[in-house]
Image 1 (spheres, one colour):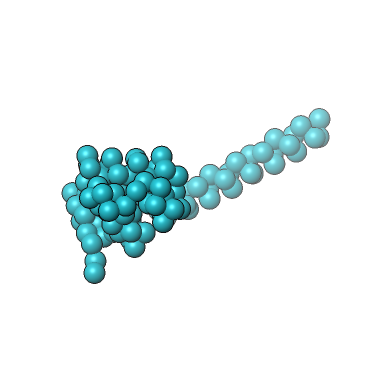
Image 2 (cartoon, helix red, strand yellow):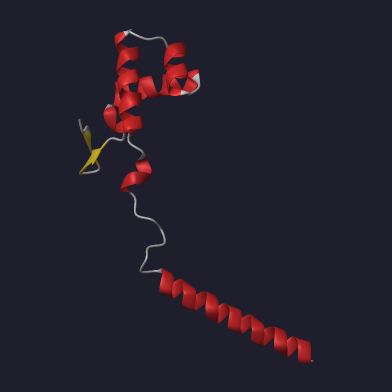
Length: 104
């Protein structure tokens, strides 16, 4: 079963790990599980489990979606050729400077 959450105007599906956290958070909220048990199951600290429980209560399921998923990377594929040229020009410039300094 796919589970989707609307976030920043987009519908994102949750990963299995995120769905597991949501299930555990709901069990905590319903009183079916203790903080200690949840921490063990999720392999997290009790503090992190408390944060997840509180966040799901206050913000809902979107809290569990990794926030980086909706961001574009800083260096896109379009930027790499430009970066390669800049690095090459810098290398050539430094080589020329080194040659000038070395010959004097």
